[in-house]
Image (tube, rainbow, N blue to C red):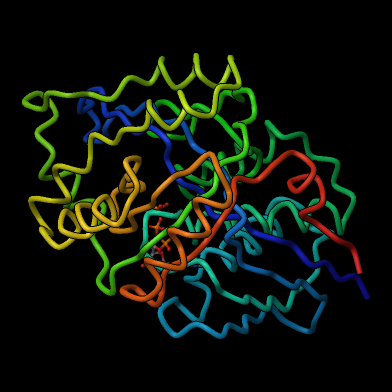
Length: 294
Ligand code: ATP
């Protein structure tokens, strides 16, 4: 009986710019995405029928779960894929701006590709993932990439030098469509400098990478949920000058180039925000070892 275990890494946006609203209603974005070692674990096992077990009550326990949508899509395209039992150990906070659902979806597709020796190229996997969501193609590859279009066009970037991160996810969620709806992109000033981040990655300069961080959606989320702005301000006052909201929020992260400093900051922030998470950027080796056949 075929089985696999897959590590599904979360992402943060080091830079998120929105260029314009398109005629089809979507927004044109330019984002530097980075995989981090905060991860869900997914077990796939052949079974009598498709079945999902999950320990998280905030996500759909049925075929609406993105992990199950991935199973069904792969079965439609590749008839050799048998019914699968999916066990999803969720650690990535839900509706957090960390691509939790997208990475589960990508991980299931990667696992099925390996289990059934489908031999799909990264491009083919990205195209399949794009059918289910704009953030999924990035989650297939990484660890560092530029995402453009609606976020589904992926261009690999030099891997980010090691960064140490402290993430805080407020107890409430934010609606991504509402954040984009409130954006009024033509009126926004202070677009982040995507090219500065790309240049810093080419130069492997971690300090310049965190200096270039920016997110055009922050202001829009802050207007809708002032608590997110208050959280960011609080995290800056706690002793970090590089603090940013990820995606459309509401997770806010502090970034450090020095691990000891990040650990000290984490110990301090945990007193006030017990759910705070310590994470590191993912490197190529970790990505290559994501899928284990059992
Ligand atoms: P993104 O950063 O890609 O915008 P997010 O981190 O904000 O995503 P998710 O955690 O992916 O948000 O959750 C978004 C929605 O997807 C939620 O309403 C959730 O119920 C649904 N969902 C479906 N499947 C999953 C899954 N496997 N894990 C998390 N959420 C899922």
